[in-house]
Amino acid sequence: MNDYIIGYKTKMIELLNWYILIPFLLLGLFFIVTNKKIAKYKYLFRNTILSSSKKYELAPVLRGRIYYPRYFYIPSLKQYLVYSDVDETGDFREYQNENKSDGKAYALLDETGNNLTVLQTSLSFSNRSGCFYGPASYIPLLETGRTKELPYDQIYNAALDLGRRDFEKLFIQLYTSSEYIEYINLRLLGDQIHEAGVIFKKGGKVEILLSGVRDSRMIRRFYEDRTVNDFDDYYLPDISNKETFPPSEPEIEMIRLETTNTNPFVHWRTGFNREFTIVNYRKEFSEGLQGVARYGCIPIYTLGESVGTAYVRFRARGETFRIKILEVPKISFVPAYNLGLRTFQLPKNIRTQNSLVFMESAQNGGSNRLGGGVFVVRNSTNTDSFADLPQGMTEKYFNTLPLNVQNALLNEKNGEKLLENIKKYPDQKNK
Image 1 (cartoon, rainbow, N blue to C red):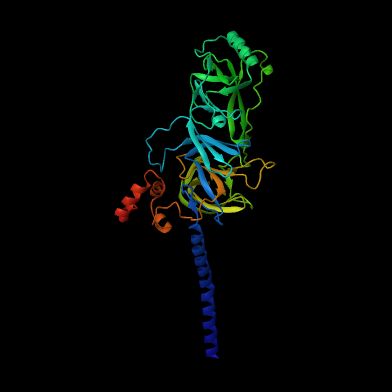
Image 2: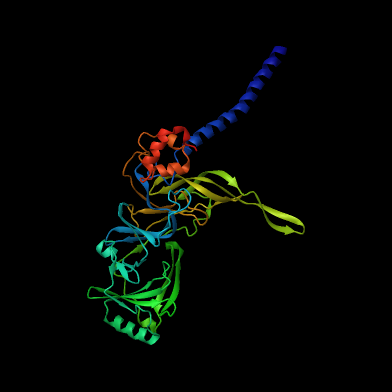
């Protein structure tokens, strides 16, 4: 009887041990599988980011801190145009002390997503004519494919001294004798002398009638459409019966790409079938308790924001990309993240299976995001996930390097020299 009781107790202890051990084994297995999956996620500063099937890649179009980029498709050319202010200075940038040049960065892509032209200029772009306009010169980019500035055939009111009546008289004279008329914003890029202008085209000539900032002869209006990132002033001539002098119909058809997410800085970690799914979030630091008010003599505190790395599954064109985003703020106890990711596509009624999908990664505060910019989903140019790494370097070793070193190694300007130093002093890689 005693032997039976002892044997029973032994069996119970063994079962109890298994009940305790099995959850720990499963938890350990979960962490192993999770860490293995997380190893597949890549920062957006990588030059090679492939989809799960390796059929598509997420390729950079503009890198740096972007400011509400605009996206267009040009049916007649079968090309896409993307432009934005781009600030390349800040954290993780090699040349932090270089001044940012004035103007926006423009990228022209073919239908497969390959860059055809990259241009940076302070001239103001017109999606009505596909030209860039300034007070003294213009660039007929989509007409000629060239990026060289050309002088106007004639500049009217160059001294900005025309009175209201003389301006109106000259405007009507030019308007009635021209084949194409367009009103342009010249203060868009910080011009403190010229406010706006009127473009006149006739007989192959391009002329401009200028309006100054102080005694402006143009009326400013504001237009906003968050679905296409459009937040611009536009101008009309300050003349009587201005409604009878509309601008000409656009010279070229440019279709705006749209987004369904008008605020990418509030991402709720809920729902299914989402473009962006946060599968893991690793908090790096937290602001802790923050005093917000007082009730009598008693202070009231709330938990502040935390900042961490978000591991994100991005789905586009039926494919999955695994990316990780640095410095993502999160409101404590609320599943809302400042993710800063969203896509832009053609309107649904004209979208095809081959239409390009653009993804932007932006921040609404703080320093530049490492991996910020505009990206495009396109057919893969290679199937090697590690093609962007220096020859002979493994992914495992690459991931042990500091992030600023990883980023610098992928930069063609300094990558080779930096790699030589790492090979020469391998024990210094984390210093």
